[in-house]
Length: 286
Image 1 (cartoon, rainbow, N blue to C red):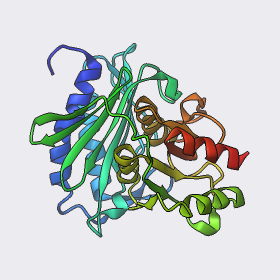
Image 2: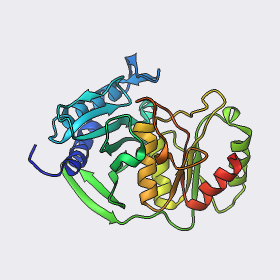
Image 3: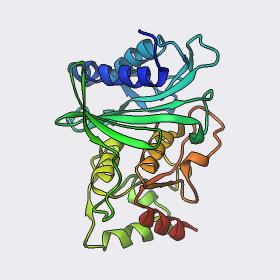
Image 4: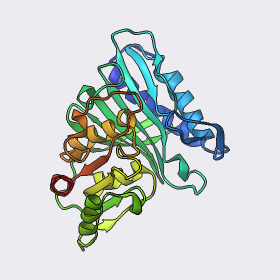
């Protein structure tokens, strides 16, 4: 690894690894004989993507810590005062068997994990769609790239959420939603200007919101009051990027980025999208 800005190097390593991760999905669609720290069955591809990223990111000068949804503890990378990188190596791996959209999510923090979203200096995601793309937020600017082999081509700079929202997608089982969230969801569904877009891989659904405007939510559930998504590896990175694109994030009462974590694998209700929709959501959940 050549000397340089470690934030740039982390982003470049993740971008360059995307092609291998995508190629490595072939033959790794079955479940591994293991669970992640959240008690979810790992796919063989989860383990593969995590090991590949851990090896490459931990070798970057200026990175002190690697944390992943797939491992209980962080890896000490040896640079005591460096950056911490939190990763969901393969978001939506349950879509492997049906061959639907998946992604990789990352956050780069300037504090040890677990850290609040205010400690992020960059975040982003890879989307393994018909085209492999990367959305990345840094210094208040969101950019989108197309990835092919080792090439990263800029296709959009200074991305902001469209003013007129178009899509919505809500996760979790409807019977497990709170009454307040269900009432909000029914109100959104009754708006003829909004279209349902929900594919079961969070990053694909959030990318729809980034592209078309709207709202994505994986709310608090009756049996999971802190929701399903992980704060360090999903909630914070997504919130950081959406807010950099001019949108809002919320755990139901305020910005996700303001949450002080207690544990590496803390969960959080995630609601992101256009300001007006997030304001309406918070009013509904009061």
